[in-house]
Picture 1: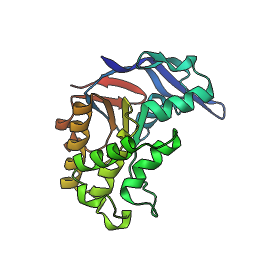
Picture 2 (picture 1 turned 90 degrees about the horizontal axis):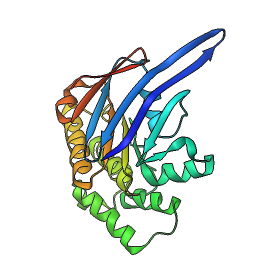
Picture 3 (picture 1 turned 120 degrees about the vertical axis):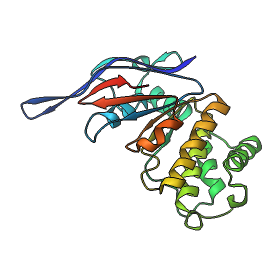
Picture 4 (picture 1 turned 90 degrees about the vertical axis):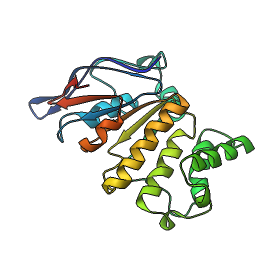
Length: 225
């Protein structure tokens, strides 16, 4: 089942008298259980595409479907709730809150969408344990390595049981060994939990770990494998 479908996505900006075409008629489908990578030079449109897929930016043209829902039919308030419920984000840096214990980083995500139950707390502990952090639940962010902090960020992205996971350069601050570990875990979790994951990366060493690879060049998206 396709979790994410992008049809004919274009995005244009005005810069003075000039029109900048950041995206041109991009098509993309990501199935449940897949991790796909989008590569390309800086300024090619990768982050714009990810922002549109994450309902953070509206396209100039085209249609965004997540789990069969056309995002254009949602109000801004509905879109905010949908984003919290259906989309998990992993960024270049883990962006953990420095004064919260590791398990509480995940609990905070649930608090944003309502009350926190015992099941939610158990799920947070289980996610962290699955990612090899069972002995770190009560630790503070500064007590973890960079790779461990990114693993917490992966767990946090799955905390709301979101169907779509979007990762923007998640290995940028890691050495190659830890980068491979993080992407392997992201792929494993997507498959195990039946989620769709999209990763923007400059690191081509990560590509063998992905199900499909797309390249973005001058706003044009093409499938590589």
